Length: 419
Image (cartoon, rainbow, N blue to C red):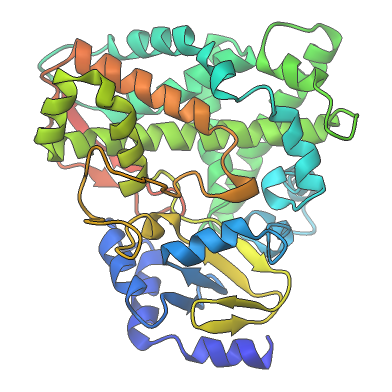
């Protein structure tokens, strides 16, 4: 640790330390009051001993980090939670060989080469071809539940929709849906800095099952192409004129599964909660479904699925009111940035339509979420189907429970509803 970094660490106030300890210690269900207080302490940038990184809470700073990949590097896999491993464990080393190849942990030109493989697969026009598939999956899964009876929509519907969609897009048999959900949750856990010890070892072991299965699919599509996403990615050349290697490709597919599942699952739970809590918006939407895209963007702004990203300063950098030395770890918080009153009027209110809603739910810059068009389409299809088929859907009597054990993906452990 450099002298400058030590000085900055000492500038974190006792109150900021207390708030972050609770936040990252799994003690906080609703993080937004914590984010709000941290945004207004000092310059909104705070050193966390738990993370060994600076938490960045204000919109301008979070957006600046996304805008400048030369200064704020993503090449930090081995500085981050997913790299934690036992060097004597060959399975841990096998996990690292694949996980370290994710393009989210790369800067140009490596990032540019890998991401270019997806350039045709996830345009808004391309994902529109999957609308009928998403509509069918949504109807199939929600129609399993009887009207008038309370149930938790998270495990049996919200978690299953994105798994079923991505499985179908990848060309995976329906009977593998349950395994995909299990694998997705395990792999997502490896990104969380608070998942350590035996929990981490188990998450790695389960993630390797996913890697092995995807590796088999990649090999099968190379031998016998089909009309699915894996075949498209196997055959698509990068901007460098080559194709991705097998391990490179399975790593990106695993990320697609995890990011897509977490995003849509959490969006369903958060979106329904926001509609229950804002009946005026719900009534307007019922009368005019053309408002749904605006409603969806406001859902993503006010309660985004992913709360943190990770960056490292490649050179000395100015952020907030401080100068950070090179190699400083940063934990930008888009969820906090999306409620920054410096950028959004009435930031804690669900405003539809909201003018100039440039939220950071999918981050910003060259690392803007490649699957955002698919997530938006899934959200639109799911909410339109639910609101048309079940116009009287309401919150259940049992309380909704936010996930507190995962600081990055703060989804819902429970969201009871009555159709």
